[in-house]
Length: 142
Length: 142
DNA sequence: AGTCCAGTTGCAAACGATTCTCATCTAAAT
DNA sequence: ATTTAGATGAGAATCGTTTGCAACTGGACT
Image (cartoon, rainbow over all chains, first blue to last red; front, side):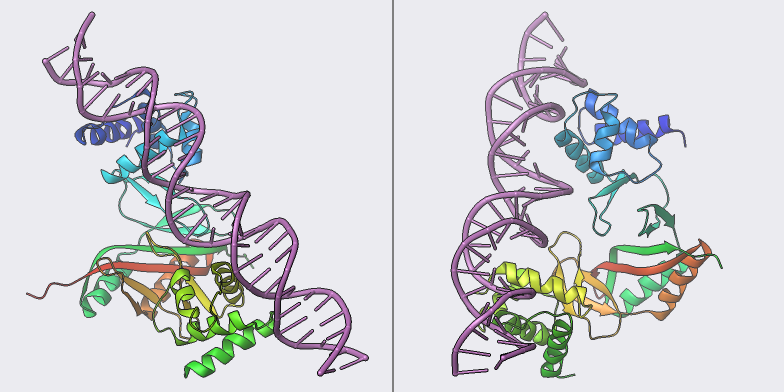
């Protein structure tokens, strides 16, 4: 999917929520659409500043919250760091965080998901959502 | 394991770390040893106050940090809540959090653990530690 | 039992990420 | 162009947690 289409999708989601598309928000949506990593609010603010100089961090947080409420972005609370965001367009996936570099690798395992659902069911629960993070280190090649 | 033995273990861990056992710490260790739930710092402070009146929340936090560094307690950062603690004596396990009541249920799946290690390995990583939380709701009986 | 001092205490202030308040602006419907 | 509900930026407020500091105290040593 192109970043233009992605921007469009984010914009549409906000409009449908009755949210106005301001210069600041357009800039932020663009930055989010372009991002292929997992930036935090401060980093997104930094990136948005070139397109919307003077945009405040409050506006970034407000817009991120709105986007999250519309379900078009995800907020991740990894250990010992501030919240990191990504557009929700992609398939569901979990995360591996390199404890040395902070780099995030996405992965998905249907078999694990199935087992999770099974375990919850056995204990009398339905899963609302889950969170699985592997904190990893590059395997030394020997 | 009795709570007395558990208190002993926590005490020993602190002593070995060159940490003094004060009246306040003894009280807190006792409270932690007795706890069979996942209390947060404020709740532990509340419970410790009967045995060590006047104990400050700073001391609770400082001691919890020391215990965590010794690996004898675990600190869990579940979504939308402050850190919750439990003694580390038990086998490794993951958590299910009832999103309605906040209740925590422990579970463990060797099959999932195996799959996790396998996935990490395939991507060239070793797992340092992981975190898996299922946010669940009681299954309506029909 | 008494001395000593590094480690500990309680308090209050500092912290960092995030949210809120509010007076001023502005998107976008009319 | 007018209107106004909603958005903005700046700074203050929040919350859980950590820290600085002067006074206190375990516990190792006589």
